[in-house]
Amino acid sequence: MDISLKERRELENYADDFHIAEIAEVQSPSTTVEIIKGLKLHEGFICTSEGCSHLCTTLKSMKQHCWSEHGWTLSKGVCHIYKH
Image 1 (tube, rainbow, N blue to C red):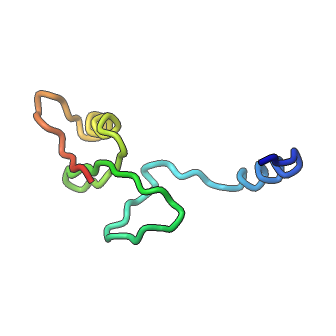
Image 2: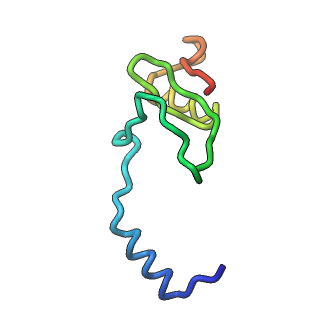
Image 3: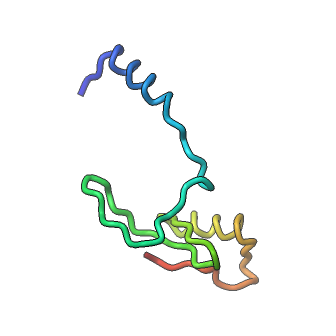
């Protein structure tokens, strides 16, 4: 699909008005949410540390979350995650 230069510039200008939220600004829903038609469903991991429900699609990214946000180290045992 070809998009003209004019259309690309219009899309760029439109996108410039969006505010990209920082991860800390985004809250995960506390209840089950229906699947939104057209969006791809990803399996992943949820952090089960108290007060945290951070979601990641890979174990590597979840471990990084546990290290940076909860001070997790191998000597502390298994980090608190649940495969979802």
